[in-house]
Length: 347
Image 1 (cartoon, rainbow, N blue to C red):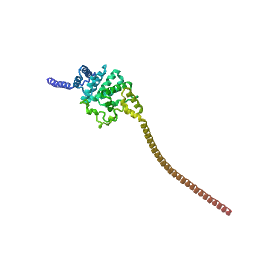
Image 2: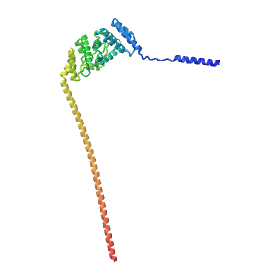
Image 3: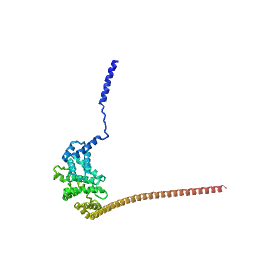
Image 4: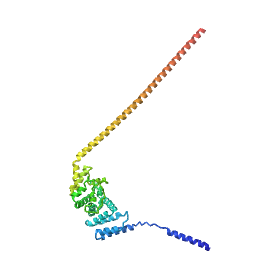
């Protein structure tokens, strides 16, 4: 019995060791960590005395990858809650854009999201958010490629989005000047972010784009200054003129002036293309009809030849049968005559 007890003791110790090695992974579905992170970001933003202090404290928080939107959304939300726009939030946002590219990409995504959902904000919040992004754009903290999401026409805008565009562009024009803004908005300019490489006033500005490497930069502002349709062009001209930014519409006015000629040239080109395609279709139809007529003639001639041969064959066969019948009749008549003569002679 003592030996059996000794054998049971190691087995129990082994089971305890195995249970200790097992680890249980617990998933926190209450998002306690996320709530704590948001609270810390909010308190840091509201308690900092200067934007340098706020940026330093937030950068030391070591926000994990994939949670960049939490910081960006909190900055935008705090900015929108103010009575008037505070430059403090613009400076904090600009410094984060220059610190790391991941923050800049997060702000670009936030711009598209805010523009698409701007109708949910009140007028005061909308004004503060527009001025925040206007500050980021005119300081070159954010690439101007974000403006490609704006399509200024009657069908794709709402009253809220038009107010957002108005405040955004007016903020940029006030800070940069009309001449500089017009040069940057020129849709024929291959390097709209060229000032980022020059640095201008800010030596920390990042060279985010290259005109030679990114030919699509020409398409950034074509939604705001449409030249695809005279109706949309006229609408954009009226919009910018009504908000006091008429000089930005010089290119669109020139396009609208030459629009009848361009439309006529396009119509002529389309007519010539349609005529060419029609001629090609006619040629192909003529070739197909000629080939079909040739094939039908061959088939009809062959069928007529076969029918004539059949008729000749039937006529010849009927003639041969008629001649054979006549011969048989003559032979039968001769035989009956011979039998009659023999009967008379025997009598």
